[in-house]
Each structure stands twice: as C-alpha cells, then as structure tokens.
Image 1 (cartoon, rainbow, N blue to C red):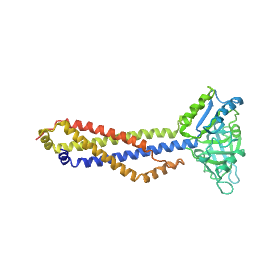
Image 2: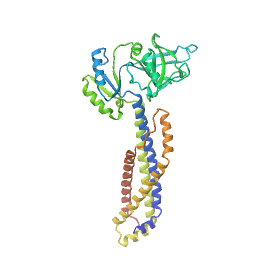
Image 3: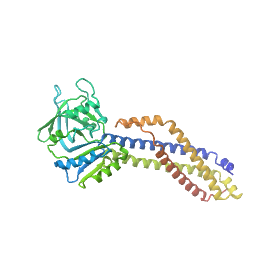
Image 4: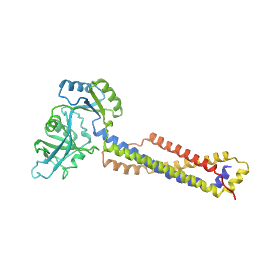
Length: 401
C-alpha cells in the first residue's frame, strides 16, 4: 500500500522535505541569533558591572559602625571576590581639557552617574579587565596592573564608560587632565585624569573614581552602600540569598540581573520579533505543505476513490499518509541540520563580530541541549499542525467525476 501511495504522491514527499528543511533552517538561524545575543548581553553585564549591590533601605549613612558591619559580612564570605564601599549620585557637570594647547579642545557637558569606590583594597569592584587604557605621555597603553596602581596611589584618576567618552567632542585618546565644573554655577569641583574606558553596554554616561574624589565632586560625605563581585557567577542568586540572610533587615541586596536597562528592553523587543517570525514561518510552511497535499488529492481523486472502494478505510489511509508526512518532516529536519551545522562556523563568526562591536565577549559554545529542546518543540508543533490539517483534508467531501 505504501508503494501505491508513493506512486500517487511521488512529488509530495520531496516538496515536504524541501519546504520543511528551509523552514527549520530559518528557525535554527533565528534561534542561534537569539542565543548569541542573549549570551552577549549576559556576558557583557556580568563582566562589566558589580554583581551584587547592598544598600541601606533608609538611605545613605555616615555611621561608621553600620559601614563596618556591612563590610564584615562580605569579607567573611568565601564566595566574594572583591567588595568596596561606594557612594553614588548623578550630577550635571561640565568637563574641559587642561593640557597645554588643549584648552577648549575637549569639552563635555551632560548629567553623569558618578560612582565613588573605596580603592584602598585590590581587586576592585571596578572590572579593570574590561577597561581599555588610554595612551600615556610615552605613547604607550598602560597595563591592567599599572592601571590598578594608578587608581590606588593617585588622587584624581578616573575610569569612564564608553557612553561617556563618546560624548566628548572630539573623543580623547590620550591620558590628559580635565577640569570638572558645576554647570549651573560654573564652580570648579575638581581636577581629574581619565585613564581608561570601561567597555560596558550601558548607554548612560558613568564615571568611576576614588571615594574621596567622588565625595568632593558630589559634595556629600555619606556612604550609599557596598558593591561586590562574586567568584562564581553561576551561583550569583544563591550567594545573594545567603548574604541577605546574614545582613540587617534594613539592608537590601540586589544583583545586576534585577536592573532594567536599554539593552534588556531591546532584547525583549527582539524576543517578541523572534516569536512573531517563528510563528509566521511555522504557520505559512504548514499551510503551504498541506495545500500541496490537497492539490495532490484533487489531482489524484479518482485513484483515491478506487482505493477506498477496494476496502481501504479512511483511518488506515490517514495514518499511512501521516507516516509519509512525518518521514518527510524528519528528512527536512535532517537537511536543515546538515546545512546549518556545515555553515555554522561562518554564521557564528559573522554574528559574533556584530556582538563584539558592542561588547568584548568571547565566542560561546552552542548550547546543544537547549538548542535541541527548542527545535524538538518546533518539530512537535509542526507535526501536530500537519496532522490536524491532514485530518481536515481527508474529512473533506471530494466530488468525483
């Protein structure tokens, strides 16, 4: 009987294999883009942001005993890599270059998120491994160790993020002195030296500097809380819960994943678009495939009627045709997988370059288990929809000449 059906629908399985193969290939590419984009954002933020932030719910404090108590909890935890007290605030400032022959050349005027961190202990909560050094007076880029030493010993050294350095006109490439002034009053607040640029994905201008220098620019002495980075990022939420239980109820501990930012919102938009495209491809391919089968039905309706008159039940006919459809879908999945994995290295390289243009992330390994879960779900949904359409077509009354 199968040989008879193959003769009747000899073009349909080939059509189904090609159609489902193209559909699954497009879905695989979309899934790969989604996974890589998600990895790029997660890796960037986990590398360039304090993992945990502990703050007093009542607000910043100058009480030294509270500050010591907070630090002791983090210092006694074996899971914490580094921690630093910090003060933070946003202030509209004007920055101008002070170097000889540079006055008025580099100028910056905007609200800046200023984070002052205790730099007396290394490593810092500032991720220097994700920072790019500016060129010094000897036309050399300083190393990470030299950068850490300058921040610990110096009084005016600061690290800014990419969003802030891009707002300078023009963008400075060398280490120079700058004067920070209050925009409204024109009062000089401090002199700073920008020594490095943090490659984060935050679109708000940010400046990291020593705690005393930040207190001078923000004109406040109180401490807002403590920034910390963990040794094992995969245990972030577990560490957060453990730390929270040891702290006073008046202290709130948050992780970087709690925050909402522009990149996370963009990813939500991308995720919505991904699902719209995936559902559209799935629906159109199923409908197109079933229309192909329906067209074959209409062309071969006489032969189908003879088979039914010879005693072949509609139920048997349905399951035999369904098995041919499923085999065709499996063939399409195999074709798509072969094409995808044979060209994955080239695809991954191009996608990775686009992500690395925003953030210095390494090439991730494709999470095959998660990838097959997604594709398995798509295959099951595709099969169910195909069988439903097939059932509808078989139950449609076909008029015979």
